[in-house]
Length: 177
Image (cartoon, rainbow, N blue to C red; front, side):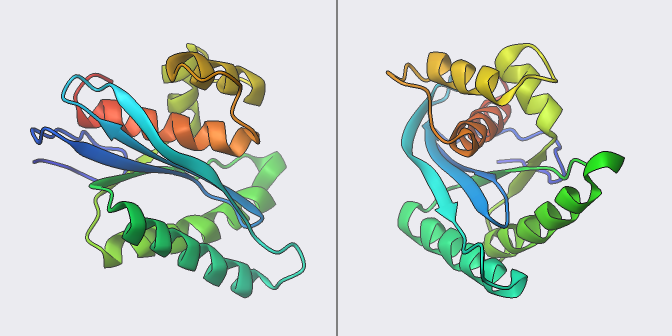
């Protein structure tokens, strides 16, 4: 298996891969665990959100996020992780800083377990799933619903984002993205 970090190319010849996709946040963080076959077809094992206390300190929320991700890693034993890269815009600098805190604890959880991480820019994920790097949350939800043959749109949008991140990570892993 060959893998590189920071959004680099992943190539895997293992017959089975399990990718944990994370849409990090310090209030709500989406996650999705997908299994991939050699063709890059993804099957959702579990997807959901972590709701972090709105009244807790940032340090307490980060601890909660770390513990929730660490528990997921133990329960599902992913072979890889795909994580949304930091997106920074001058109008949303505070959001980028908050997200960076969340990403840090997620990266730490993966590193402590030796799990390779691909950091995927949001525009890359959106373009891969919808054909539009500026897709709306609802467009992402519809794309994930269609590509994963779901009966309903994943809610809240953080779940769809996490599934999309895992799909892109798994397809990159299989060389089909």
